[in-house]
Image 1 (cartoon, one colour):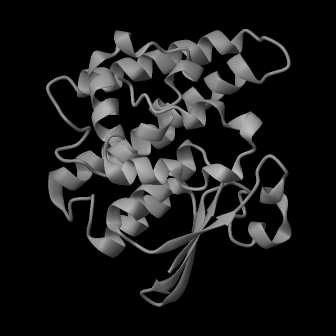
Image 2 (tube, rainbow, N blue to C red):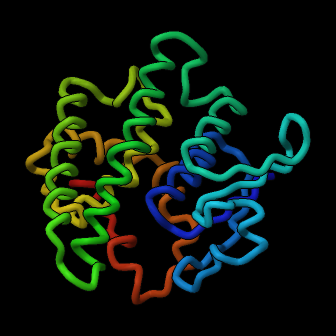
Length: 221
């Protein structure tokens, strides 16, 4: 059994979707980031960076395994199950390339765009920098997906890592009609049963007044 410390977000969706794709049993341990649960001492022992997601795998290869950081968790689960990451060679490297692209680029830039456009108390010049860089990254992804179904050679943890971020495309000031290959990929991945189940996991943890976009079912159509 895997305990998933969780509050719905692009990064936690990576893990809930991966667990669903791999068919691993898990239970959600709610961490209400709106109420500050991520700063409590018991959670900081698991995730010293005070961020979700985090997991405890009670059936690790050498006993109980505790991990934080979504990318590390995706890699761990892929290696634990032998799923959604090629075992070696260039195919593995390609999947990791796009996983790290999300972690180092799309996530940070899109996240800052979302914050400064929607939540910041005042408008600052940097928002244009974040927005233009996010647009550039969407274009990079669109180019990569030209003639391809997935970011790597096959459906992989790279697609899982990116998909939850693209869910919030309008919060990133993006119009998917300007990125048709991303739109096609987003819709296709979003129709996978495990992706639907993973995205809807723990939705009831979010107060109704804050759910908004979390409840839409357009999948980019």
